[in-house]
Image (cartoon, rainbow, N blue to C red):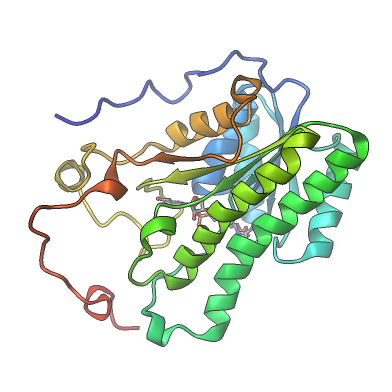
Length: 284
Ligand code: NAP
């Protein structure tokens, strides 16, 4: 028997006005899990900023937020660029209000064996995931501290923070940095009323993933490959995000919450045959 499925998409987990009057920025909020989180914040009354590079992605995120009756603002952003991050906050303050919550969700990832990973590929992923999370958190905190406001940062991590993993040297190292950064910032900013947490998703397939990263498994296979017997549903992640940034988690900071059906903890008494990464990935 698998872990039971969650209540259906559309069910609110917190009181409907939990985020009324608040502005929530979701980097990479136009696709996949970022969009799912944006929608759950909107459902609870937040005005949501969808910040990413591609106009069509931002449009998809804004449309999803508006479909649940929320207010959405799309802002062009490359999280690697400190000036662009500052400009994004300026735009949001001008068009909406100062930001209350930042979700550092933007990421890049493409599996490649470490020996074939170009320095550019390494830098690109580390810059988006780790440096981008730092730049957005720093800009947010500097502004919140200057105006004496409380707030919350949520970094999106990954469970290979602790294990590493084949084909993901760049992303796993960057996510490990994000988990660690969460703890440093939580301690520095708690006296300023700013909480910093991290949410590490397990396997959450969705249609926006590139083919190479999409779940190459059937529900029947997932039932036997994941201890919890199923993959995660994106709105489950949205609920966790809305809880972690809400007043109901007011004493919770510096924490990484794993949502993965116990998948990263699985071991076998006898491990399956080991297949080198070069043989797991298609040539090129
Ligand atoms: P996704 O669909 O590929 O979304 C990534 C988003 O990041 C895109 O919307 C992209 O938008 C944005 N982005 C990329 N580079 C950016 C940059 N330089 N500046 C601003 N935005 C940028 O990925 P996802 O599956 O939803 O994953 C969301 C988060 O969950 C990521 O942090 C990922 O590592 C984590 N995660 C996902 C899974 C999973 O099973 N899906 C598992 C573990 C962890 P633009 O192209 O418009 O910039």
